[in-house]
Length: 307
Image (cartoon, rainbow, N blue to C red; front, side, top):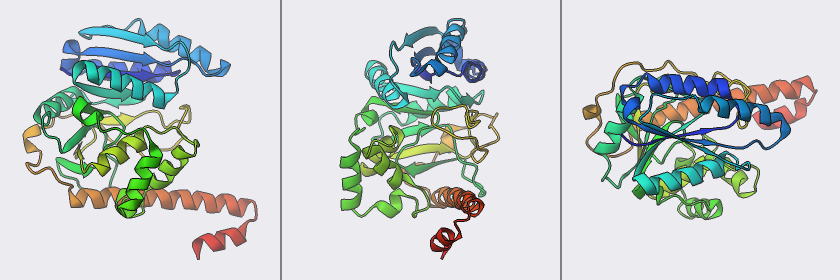
């Protein structure tokens, strides 16, 4: 079994649900669990960090448990980059979760079988557990170019391609004229996210992981039905606001990895479905922005945006 890396901060009730869901997987008792517990960055977060660490020490049911308690606040990006790098070099492959990723009872089976199948295929960057709630019916398993960040797994050979330099990544995307493809037909905001990371307005490791693998023409395997659901979009997280846009019905049935496509290439139907989903999100955000503008009487600005 690949080791499980769990990254936590100050939400003990979320973490408890994640652990409970993992323990419903038969493979949990054969899996080593490494928990990276970040330290509080301010007084307001300290109580949650203490309570989280108290709960972590009560965990049992895994093959082994090791808790890495950060003595200073690393932040999510640094914590994940360091943790994944350390463990993937030690074990060769890892499964990565955050403290708000509740998984299917067949999540670990899907991850481990997929890791084994594609271990030596340099075209595959990662295995993903979450899939967006698209309107279209998706294939049982499919590939999308690049990598993703909500419940995933990878190998050392793929993580070696990770480039933490956002400016280098953005320059290469623009040099090769890949902005539209990178942004799912300009329906996503990944270019903007990368620009903000470069300017220090966010610390996203995920957009750099996506860009690194995208530029190497690598792909990620997705399930047609999500093997993970987010429980952190409740306004309590450090990096997210309250929303139900990413809610999914958790797949509680096993996935037959033999149904994965033999040819590792991007699925056009799934790519369009993702693009449509991202477009709906952007439209939803614009509606909210328009409402706020109307509320404050800024109708001229609205007309400029929509015309």
